[in-house]
Amino acid sequence: MRALLVVNPKATTTSERTQDVLVRALASDLKLDVATTTHRGHAAQLARDAAVEGVDLVIALGGDGTVNEVANGVLANGPSPELPAVAVVPGGSTNVFARALGLPNDPVEATGVLLDALRGGRERRIGLGMADHRWFLFCAGFGLDAEVVARVEDRRARGSKSTPGLYVRSALRGFYRSGGTRRSGPLTLEAPGQEPVEGLCLGIVQNTNPWTYLGSRPVHACPDASFDTALDLFGLTKMSTLPTLRHLSRMLGSSGNGPKGRHVVSLHDCVTFTLKAEESVSLQVDGDHLGEHHTVTFRGVPRALRVIV
Image 1: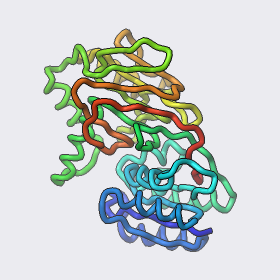
Image 2: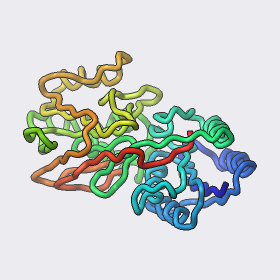
Image 3: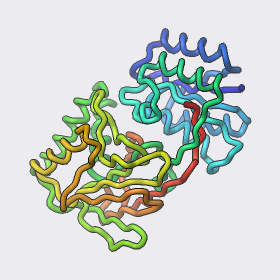
Image 4: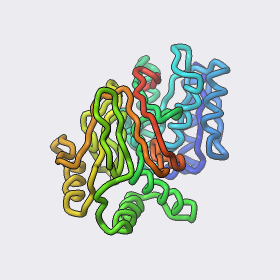
Protein backbone atom coordinates (compact mmCIF):
# COMPACT_ATOMS: atom_id res chain seq x y z
CA MET A 1 0.00 0.00 0.00
CA ARG A 2 1.37 3.41 -1.00
CA ALA A 3 1.12 5.90 1.82
CA LEU A 4 2.12 9.49 2.50
CA LEU A 5 2.88 10.57 6.05
CA VAL A 6 2.32 14.32 6.46
CA VAL A 7 4.29 15.53 9.48
CA ASN A 8 3.76 18.83 11.24
CA PRO A 9 7.20 19.48 12.78
CA LYS A 10 5.62 21.86 15.29
CA ALA A 11 3.32 19.14 16.69
CA THR A 12 3.34 19.89 20.40
CA THR A 13 3.45 16.37 21.86
CA THR A 14 5.88 14.52 19.59
CA SER A 15 9.65 14.91 19.72
CA GLU A 16 11.92 14.26 16.74
CA ARG A 17 12.93 10.96 18.31
CA THR A 18 9.29 9.90 18.67
CA GLN A 19 8.59 10.89 15.07
CA ASP A 20 11.53 8.75 13.91
CA VAL A 21 10.15 5.75 15.83
CA LEU A 22 6.72 6.23 14.28
CA VAL A 23 8.13 6.54 10.76
CA ARG A 24 10.10 3.30 11.13
CA ALA A 25 7.06 1.46 12.48
CA LEU A 26 4.82 2.63 9.62
CA ALA A 27 7.46 1.96 6.97
CA SER A 28 7.62 -1.67 8.08
CA ASP A 29 4.08 -2.24 6.72
CA LEU A 30 3.73 0.46 4.07
CA LYS A 31 5.48 1.83 1.02
CA LEU A 32 5.89 5.10 2.85
CA ASP A 33 6.84 8.60 1.74
CA VAL A 34 7.27 11.30 4.38
CA ALA A 35 6.63 15.01 3.85
CA THR A 36 7.15 17.73 6.46
CA THR A 37 4.97 20.84 6.37
CA THR A 38 6.60 24.26 6.25
CA HIS A 39 3.68 26.68 6.30
CA ARG A 40 -0.07 26.96 6.81
CA GLY A 41 -1.92 25.26 3.97
CA HIS A 42 1.02 23.02 3.07
CA ALA A 43 -0.61 19.85 4.44
CA ALA A 44 -3.65 20.49 2.22
CA GLN A 45 -1.43 20.85 -0.86
CA LEU A 46 0.48 17.66 -0.05
CA ALA A 47 -2.74 15.70 0.42
CA ARG A 48 -4.25 17.12 -2.77
CA ASP A 49 -1.18 16.06 -4.74
CA ALA A 50 -1.27 12.60 -3.14
CA ALA A 51 -4.88 12.16 -4.25
CA VAL A 52 -3.98 13.13 -7.82
CA GLU A 53 -1.04 10.70 -7.81
CA GLY A 54 -3.19 7.78 -6.70
CA VAL A 55 -1.70 7.29 -3.24
CA ASP A 56 -3.75 4.80 -1.21
CA LEU A 57 -3.46 6.36 2.25
CA VAL A 58 -2.60 9.79 3.69
CA ILE A 59 -1.56 9.78 7.35
CA ALA A 60 -1.58 13.03 9.34
CA LEU A 61 0.92 13.33 12.20
CA GLY A 62 -0.03 16.49 14.05
CA GLY A 63 -2.90 18.25 15.72
CA ASP A 64 -6.46 18.87 14.57
CA GLY A 65 -5.36 21.68 12.24
CA THR A 66 -3.05 19.33 10.34
CA VAL A 67 -5.75 16.68 10.04
CA ASN A 68 -8.25 19.29 8.84
CA GLU A 69 -5.87 20.41 6.11
CA VAL A 70 -5.24 16.82 5.02
CA ALA A 71 -8.99 16.16 4.77
CA ASN A 72 -9.51 19.37 2.77
CA GLY A 73 -6.68 18.40 0.42
CA VAL A 74 -8.00 14.87 -0.15
CA LEU A 75 -11.54 16.22 -0.72
CA ALA A 76 -10.50 19.23 -2.80
CA ASN A 77 -12.69 18.05 -5.68
CA GLY A 78 -15.39 16.46 -3.54
CA PRO A 79 -15.91 12.95 -2.17
CA SER A 80 -15.18 9.94 -4.37
CA PRO A 81 -14.65 6.20 -3.79
CA GLU A 82 -11.32 6.52 -5.63
CA LEU A 83 -9.77 8.92 -3.12
CA PRO A 84 -7.12 7.92 -0.58
CA ALA A 85 -8.13 6.89 2.88
CA VAL A 86 -7.04 9.11 5.77
CA ALA A 87 -5.46 8.07 9.06
CA VAL A 88 -4.44 10.06 12.11
CA VAL A 89 -1.52 9.89 14.52
CA PRO A 90 -2.31 12.50 17.20
CA GLY A 91 0.46 14.99 17.84
CA GLY A 92 -1.32 18.14 18.98
CA SER A 93 -2.38 19.50 22.33
CA THR A 94 -6.05 18.47 22.09
CA ASN A 95 -6.54 15.93 19.25
CA VAL A 96 -10.34 16.06 19.32
CA PHE A 97 -10.80 14.25 16.01
CA ALA A 98 -8.49 11.34 16.83
CA ARG A 99 -10.09 10.87 20.24
CA ALA A 100 -13.60 11.07 18.73
CA LEU A 101 -12.60 8.17 16.48
CA GLY A 102 -11.66 6.21 19.59
CA LEU A 103 -7.89 6.43 19.08
CA PRO A 104 -5.48 6.66 22.02
CA ASN A 105 -4.14 10.15 22.66
CA ASP A 106 -0.58 8.78 22.82
CA PRO A 107 1.00 8.85 19.32
CA VAL A 108 2.91 5.59 19.78
CA GLU A 109 -0.18 3.70 20.95
CA ALA A 110 -2.24 5.28 18.17
CA THR A 111 0.32 4.10 15.61
CA GLY A 112 -0.06 0.57 16.95
CA VAL A 113 -3.85 0.81 16.56
CA LEU A 114 -3.40 2.12 13.00
CA LEU A 115 -1.11 -0.76 12.04
CA ASP A 116 -3.58 -3.28 13.50
CA ALA A 117 -6.40 -1.64 11.52
CA LEU A 118 -4.39 -1.83 8.30
CA ARG A 119 -3.55 -5.49 8.85
CA GLY A 120 -7.19 -6.25 9.66
CA GLY A 121 -8.62 -4.15 6.82
CA ARG A 122 -10.63 -1.97 9.23
CA GLU A 123 -11.99 1.26 7.85
CA ARG A 124 -14.98 3.52 8.28
CA ARG A 125 -16.76 6.10 6.15
CA ILE A 126 -17.75 9.16 8.16
CA GLY A 127 -19.83 12.22 7.46
CA LEU A 128 -18.17 15.64 7.53
CA GLY A 129 -19.35 19.22 7.76
CA MET A 130 -18.80 22.16 5.46
CA ALA A 131 -18.65 25.82 6.41
CA ASP A 132 -19.29 27.43 3.03
CA HIS A 133 -16.52 25.73 1.00
CA ARG A 134 -14.28 24.59 3.88
CA TRP A 135 -14.56 21.03 5.19
CA PHE A 136 -14.50 20.44 8.93
CA LEU A 137 -14.10 17.22 10.85
CA PHE A 138 -15.69 17.74 14.25
CA CYS A 139 -16.75 21.34 14.88
CA ALA A 140 -17.09 24.88 13.65
CA GLY A 141 -17.99 28.04 15.50
CA PHE A 142 -19.37 31.43 14.53
CA GLY A 143 -19.21 34.22 17.08
CA LEU A 144 -17.88 34.02 20.63
CA ASP A 145 -16.07 30.66 20.54
CA ALA A 146 -14.34 31.65 17.30
CA GLU A 147 -13.27 34.92 18.94
CA VAL A 148 -11.64 32.82 21.66
CA VAL A 149 -9.78 30.78 19.03
CA ALA A 150 -8.55 34.01 17.42
CA ARG A 151 -7.24 35.28 20.77
CA VAL A 152 -5.52 31.97 21.48
CA GLU A 153 -3.87 31.95 18.05
CA ASP A 154 -2.61 35.49 18.68
CA ARG A 155 -1.15 34.47 22.05
CA ARG A 156 0.50 31.39 20.54
CA ALA A 157 2.05 33.53 17.80
CA ARG A 158 3.61 35.60 20.60
CA GLY A 159 5.09 32.53 22.27
CA SER A 160 2.38 31.24 24.63
CA LYS A 161 1.94 27.48 24.91
CA SER A 162 -1.39 25.98 23.89
CA THR A 163 -3.01 24.69 27.08
CA PRO A 164 -6.59 24.30 28.37
CA GLY A 165 -5.84 27.17 30.75
CA LEU A 166 -5.02 29.49 27.87
CA TYR A 167 -8.41 28.78 26.27
CA VAL A 168 -10.24 29.29 29.57
CA ARG A 169 -8.47 32.58 30.30
CA SER A 170 -9.12 33.83 26.77
CA ALA A 171 -12.83 32.94 27.05
CA LEU A 172 -13.18 34.66 30.42
CA ARG A 173 -11.43 37.80 29.19
CA GLY A 174 -13.72 38.00 26.18
CA PHE A 175 -16.83 37.37 28.27
CA TYR A 176 -16.07 39.92 30.97
CA ARG A 177 -14.75 42.46 28.52
CA SER A 178 -18.36 42.66 27.34
CA GLY A 179 -19.52 43.42 30.90
CA GLY A 180 -20.13 39.83 32.00
CA THR A 181 -23.38 39.58 30.07
CA ARG A 182 -24.58 39.48 26.50
CA ARG A 183 -28.32 40.07 26.39
CA SER A 184 -28.56 39.85 22.65
CA GLY A 185 -26.10 38.55 20.12
CA PRO A 186 -25.30 39.55 16.55
CA LEU A 187 -26.35 36.30 14.86
CA THR A 188 -29.49 35.12 13.09
CA LEU A 189 -30.13 31.43 12.46
CA GLU A 190 -31.98 30.40 9.32
CA ALA A 191 -32.90 26.73 8.92
CA PRO A 192 -35.23 25.18 6.32
CA GLY A 193 -38.83 24.91 7.51
CA GLN A 194 -38.26 27.04 10.62
CA GLU A 195 -38.75 30.67 11.54
CA PRO A 196 -35.46 32.62 11.76
CA VAL A 197 -34.01 32.90 15.27
CA GLU A 198 -32.44 36.27 15.97
CA GLY A 199 -30.09 37.46 18.68
CA LEU A 200 -27.75 34.49 19.04
CA CYS A 201 -24.53 35.27 20.91
CA LEU A 202 -22.73 32.30 19.46
CA GLY A 203 -23.28 29.28 17.26
CA ILE A 204 -21.36 26.07 17.93
CA VAL A 205 -21.75 23.56 15.10
CA GLN A 206 -20.81 19.93 15.74
CA ASN A 207 -20.25 17.00 13.41
CA THR A 208 -19.53 14.65 16.31
CA ASN A 209 -19.38 14.66 20.09
CA PRO A 210 -17.57 15.97 22.10
CA TRP A 211 -17.14 19.58 21.00
CA THR A 212 -13.67 19.77 22.53
CA TYR A 213 -11.65 18.74 25.57
CA LEU A 214 -10.46 20.64 28.64
CA GLY A 215 -7.41 18.54 29.35
CA SER A 216 -8.81 15.02 29.63
CA ARG A 217 -12.42 16.15 30.15
CA PRO A 218 -14.75 16.12 27.14
CA VAL A 219 -17.07 19.10 26.65
CA HIS A 220 -20.55 18.08 25.46
CA ALA A 221 -22.34 21.01 23.82
CA CYS A 222 -24.33 18.72 21.46
CA PRO A 223 -24.27 15.22 23.02
CA ASP A 224 -26.25 13.62 20.17
CA ALA A 225 -23.90 14.75 17.40
CA SER A 226 -22.38 11.90 15.43
CA PHE A 227 -20.26 11.12 12.37
CA ASP A 228 -23.30 9.08 11.20
CA THR A 229 -25.78 11.98 11.23
CA ALA A 230 -25.83 15.48 9.77
CA LEU A 231 -24.94 18.58 11.83
CA ASP A 232 -25.96 19.71 15.32
CA LEU A 233 -26.04 23.28 16.62
CA PHE A 234 -25.83 24.79 20.09
CA GLY A 235 -26.57 28.49 20.47
CA LEU A 236 -27.45 30.99 23.18
CA THR A 237 -29.62 34.08 22.86
CA LYS A 238 -28.47 35.45 26.22
CA MET A 239 -25.28 35.05 28.21
CA SER A 240 -24.90 36.11 31.83
CA THR A 241 -22.64 34.72 34.52
CA LEU A 242 -24.77 32.26 36.49
CA PRO A 243 -26.76 30.75 33.60
CA THR A 244 -23.59 30.44 31.54
CA LEU A 245 -21.85 28.63 34.40
CA ARG A 246 -24.83 26.24 34.64
CA HIS A 247 -24.60 25.52 30.91
CA LEU A 248 -20.87 24.88 31.23
CA SER A 249 -21.48 22.55 34.18
CA ARG A 250 -23.89 20.48 32.09
CA MET A 251 -21.41 20.39 29.20
CA LEU A 252 -18.73 19.02 31.53
CA GLY A 253 -21.06 16.61 33.32
CA SER A 254 -21.17 12.86 32.82
CA SER A 255 -24.97 12.60 32.49
CA GLY A 256 -24.87 12.79 28.70
CA ASN A 257 -27.39 15.64 28.70
CA GLY A 258 -26.62 18.88 26.92
CA PRO A 259 -27.47 22.43 28.04
CA LYS A 260 -31.16 23.30 28.28
CA GLY A 261 -33.14 26.45 29.01
CA ARG A 262 -35.23 29.13 27.37
CA HIS A 263 -32.18 30.90 25.97
CA VAL A 264 -30.74 27.71 24.46
CA VAL A 265 -31.18 27.15 20.72
CA SER A 266 -30.41 23.70 19.34
CA LEU A 267 -30.62 21.72 16.13
CA HIS A 268 -30.01 18.00 15.64
CA ASP A 269 -29.21 16.07 12.45
CA CYS A 270 -29.73 19.14 10.28
CA VAL A 271 -28.50 18.90 6.68
CA THR A 272 -28.09 22.64 6.13
CA PHE A 273 -28.58 25.96 7.90
CA THR A 274 -27.15 29.48 7.76
CA LEU A 275 -25.85 31.89 10.38
CA LYS A 276 -25.88 35.58 9.51
CA ALA A 277 -24.51 38.71 11.15
CA GLU A 278 -25.05 42.37 10.28
CA GLU A 279 -21.42 43.07 11.13
CA SER A 280 -18.71 40.53 10.39
CA VAL A 281 -17.85 38.09 13.19
CA SER A 282 -15.20 35.40 13.68
CA LEU A 283 -15.40 31.91 12.18
CA GLN A 284 -13.39 28.88 13.27
CA VAL A 285 -13.30 25.30 12.00
CA ASP A 286 -11.65 22.48 13.96
CA GLY A 287 -9.88 25.05 16.12
CA ASP A 288 -8.44 27.18 13.28
CA HIS A 289 -9.53 30.80 12.93
CA LEU A 290 -10.69 31.63 9.40
CA GLY A 291 -11.18 35.37 9.75
CA GLU A 292 -14.43 37.34 9.95
CA HIS A 293 -17.57 36.73 7.91
CA HIS A 294 -21.08 38.14 7.52
CA THR A 295 -22.78 34.90 6.49
CA VAL A 296 -21.80 31.24 6.68
CA THR A 297 -23.84 28.31 5.38
CA PHE A 298 -23.21 24.97 7.06
CA ARG A 299 -23.87 21.60 5.43
CA GLY A 300 -23.55 18.02 6.57
CA VAL A 301 -22.20 15.63 3.94
CA PRO A 302 -22.73 11.90 4.68
CA ARG A 303 -19.97 9.31 4.16
CA ALA A 304 -17.59 11.95 2.84
CA LEU A 305 -14.29 10.56 4.13
CA ARG A 306 -12.78 7.08 4.41
CA VAL A 307 -10.74 6.72 7.61
CA ILE A 308 -8.62 3.86 8.91
CA VAL A 309 -9.48 3.12 12.56
